[in-house]
Image 1 (cartoon, rainbow, N blue to C red):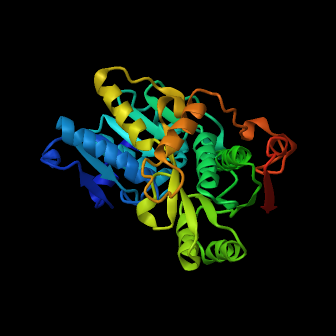
Image 2 (tube, one colour):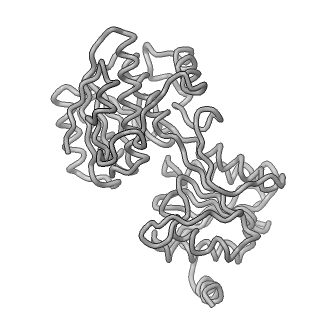
Image 3 (tube, rainbow, N blue to C red):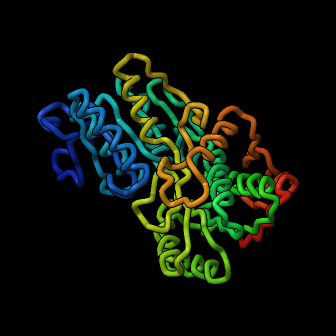
Amino acid sequence: MKKMFASLLALSMVLVGCGSGGGDSEDKTPEIALVTDQGTISDKSFNQSAWEAVEEYGDKNEVGTKYYKPSSFDTAGYTQQIENAIENGAKIVVCPGYKFNQTIANIQNEYPDVSFILIDGTPAEAEETPAEPAKNVYCAKYEEAQPGYLAGYAAVKEGYTKLGFMGGISLPAVINYGYGYLQGANDAAKELGIQVEVKYTYTGSFNESPDIQSKAAGWYNTGTEIIFSCGGQICNSIFAAAEQTNKMTIGVDSDQKDASQTVLTSAMKGVKKTVADEIAAVYAGTFEGGLHILNAEGDYVGLSDDFSRFKKFTQTDYEKVFETVKNGTVKIITNDDVEKDAQGNPNTKTLKDVLTNVTVSYEK
């Protein structure tokens, strides 16, 4: 009954947003679909990275593609457009973000012949009760502490000694970026024989706001030289503050250098590579559902490959430190390793014990 209703509804509504994979893809059945999260396919984040992978595969292999933008960014909106995509012939549906968790939990068993690629999430029932991913659902999670570490290391090696970290909501993914950032900064500072100061906070939101811009500008005006912006659209506020004060930033998740001239580099998750690899796996018959933890070992995390804004830290320097992360020489403490009641506090004993060359000022 639910699918019948969704089909009728889809026929009666104009699709909010759609696109094709280029060439004569629009004349083909759109076998590969992307349902966007909040934002657009040019958001310089998960939507854009995932769509680029879909579009490139479609162009190269002459497979029809299409993206769908929900009328509301919630379980009902996501469900409607996923079912719309399947009605239109989708065999693969890409869902870029944890907000799809409940939707996938609800529908994964209804479409056993459709392959779902869920980025940065796992199926969950109402109130985030975990659900086992079905065999047709590939769930990609990333070890954020690794690119966070590389970002902190690069910043200090570049010459910055007064750093900032602004996370969105203190969820494990955000916390791990921050914890990694502190440890990378610390290891670089130890190698250089210097001390580094870091201001650290969570904004409590993933949305841009004048308050966040004002806070970031305040940090910059009192000495902070570079801020790691880690939390969805808060980057827009932090980039604006950096532009206003002629300071620098570090982007997150995707390469954000085109969003602002202040972006030194970005701590990235390989969303495009993940989606491209799993689309290829579906067509090769090697697709394997379940939870997959992706990291430097598979080149699924790292910094942007554009080093043009660095003056001291080189690509060769990066490759050396990346290898130590990739081969496990560097052990990075994560949210799972600290006291259970830490809730993202960077001044937990477990972390403070290793931060020999970093002093953290935590603003709750």
